[in-house]
Length: 195
Image (cartoon, rainbow, N blue to C red):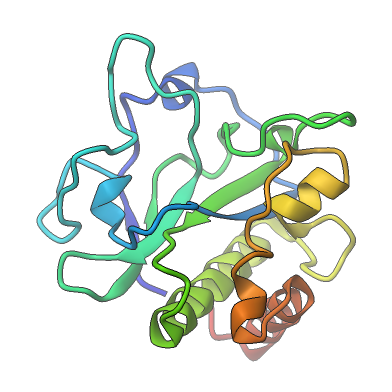
């Protein structure tokens, strides 16, 4: 895992500074064909690269979304993770469902999508996501195989704790992966001591 930190200090979610005790991890993907981290995270730290529409903005109404991290491509094309909120801050990533919101107790991160056809890119960001999730589960004493601990946005919607989104189940199966595979690989990574 290649973990960097650049908090979105101008995002209204960061400014709110509402805290939680993390009880799970929610995996998201951006839904846009742009794998560059600089599209979402900024300002450029020299490694990140820049983009025209990042989430660290103080525009009049501010951003109404914020995740704890993004996974995608750096300026040099390699894959990395950028932490954008403290892990114990309430993020604005899940929306709401009939049973509440995963925002109250799940760390959320976005995987930057490409055109969903590049197997090498998928393998790199998938592995980075597994390692990030293993790191978070180890840090907060979470069992990735326990029900509701490691979920994607689509699973959160089905469970009634997120808005109706398809991510990441529209992407992972294209490369033969499921969320069950993901959770198993997180557990294997934790057990192997790689993170």
